[in-house]
Image 1: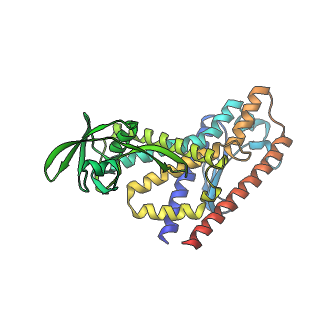
Image 2: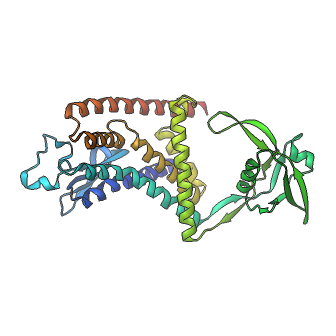
Image 3: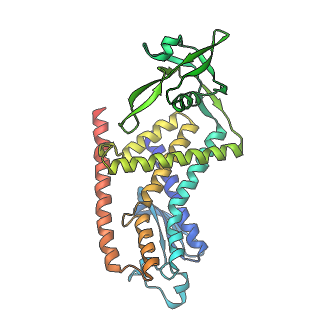
Length: 356
């Protein structure tokens, strides 16, 4: 039950943020919003405000939508002459572009907010304390032992394992001077990293300079002030965006197997797991999923936000909208692709569950 609860919380917040972007931007440009829905399918409950907007929760919690007056110029909801000024379809192409783009943009903004909050709450940073030492590698041959703490490499102070790792990688295999603390004593060792072939996050073989040590797992909790936290939140968000875009490209080019695609069951499992690990881990997870949601929606696939944005760009170039026939045909193809992706992701989730 806890897993289901946290899955609904995470998805609910991220869907709300995405649709809030569409909603607020539509209101800014004077478009009348008819429905703001969390979820698809049958309406479970809601209310209507004085402007006529229906706020509702629907039965299928795997998305949401904002229905605007004149969106698509549906024949079932014709727009009267007096209401044309409030119609989405009658706004300029860049106004419509902004309204659609605002959904993914809010996902990116939320990621920065969530990560900034995580850095203020406190993040666990692995200390540069040595754990296992690989026999026959440069660190072991130089005399590094389990429990040693690296305090400097050259003149650069080392406060975290990440700084230690990045400094070794940046050495390009050149000799490095390590300042080491052991049992209250400080001494220096010169270690020349050895370039080794390793497997990266995407299963590719890459070469890195290594000395043959692993972290001990010791951590310290670091709390950052608001300004520094926001800067670090923005930096970490950009890293997550780069990682997500790279992952999608690796999937397209078949470097990464499509069997790695996760669906709602995996998200639910991860939501429950990260929630049990504390607020910071949950915020990092929500930021990552929010970025994934934003980038996924920007893909130029008809029916997604990116598909609509592509049609708007074509309209801006040619000076007239893409025909309803073309859009309708493209949307049907997009819906088919999206359903195939969802079925594939669900298949992967079930395979992982039964294999565990």
